[in-house]
Every structure is written in C-alpha cells, then in structure tokens.
Length: 197
Image 1 (cartoon, rainbow, N blue to C red):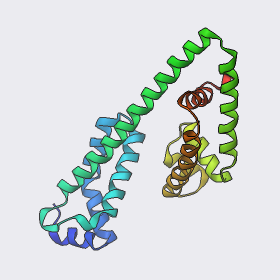
Image 2: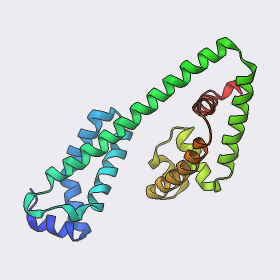
Image 3: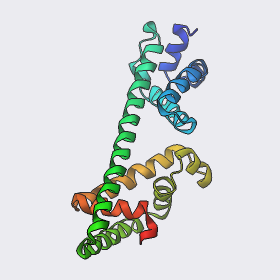
Image 4: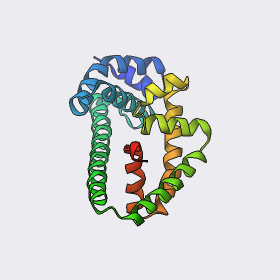
C-alpha cells in the first residue's frame, strides 16, 4: 500500500518514489495490457508507455486521492488508442488486398504504370530521410520489429526510436497528402507483396 508521502514525492519528481509505484502496479498494468493486446511484446510496450505517461503527467495527481484511479485512467486511454490504431491497420490491409485482387483480374496497364510511379515517389521519400531514421522506419514498418528490438539492435534508447518514427511518419504523411487514395494503396500493396515487383 502506498502512502500519501510517497505519492507526493513522486509528483515532485522523486525517481525513487516512481520506482516504488512502478513496482507496486507493474504486474496489474501488464496483465491489463496483455488482456487486450494478447501479446507479451505489445503488453510490455504498452506498459512502458503507460508508466512514461504517468511520469509526464504526475503534476495532475492529487496525493490525497491516491494514484491507482489515475493510473487506470491513463492505462485505458493508451490501450484504447492502441486498439483503435491496430483496428485501422487491419482494416487498411483488408482494403489493400481487396483492391488489388480486383486490379489483378482487370489487368489494367495504366494502373500498373500508376503503381510504379507511386512506388518510385515513395522510395525517393524514404531515401531522402536521414540514414538512421530511414533504417529505423524500415525495421519497424517492413520487418515488423518492436521499438525495444530496434533500440537494442541499434544501441539507442527506445525514446530515440520513437522520435525517429514520429519524424519519419510526418514526412511520409506529407507525401501521402499529395497523392490520391489509390496511389497510397498501390504503394502499400507493393511494400506488403514485394515479390510482385
């Protein structure tokens, strides 16, 4: 059980108090994340994000009210956002596959030309990224590695990996805004099925 003095020390930036809170709630938060993500790696990543968010927003905590309720609210928000993004990604993959099954049946040469032009544009955008940022993006997007795996392999912090991804996605998003939806689907399809190149 955590006393108000520990919670107060935490809100004032005491790292030892944070470690105490982490130790008390880690298993419960990890179990909550695992229940929804059904993956140990995803649960570990979500748990890390939750405690990081707890640290960043510690000023909002009232020691008299305890910390568990606030921590559960942070957990629900982060897990909900993750589920929403995962659902969107799954839906996008289904749309990609459906679209290109139809395109394959039609065998339209102009669509294949459009696809090659779009892919070329996407590759140029990737190649214009700083080398390490490009590498981080490719490891996560194409090799489906976790942030922790990339951080360990490149000997950089997990926060540095996240920063590279945020900045790379910003550039990619800018490129996508200049293309129509079908161009973007074309690019993703060739990334998912490179053997068709």
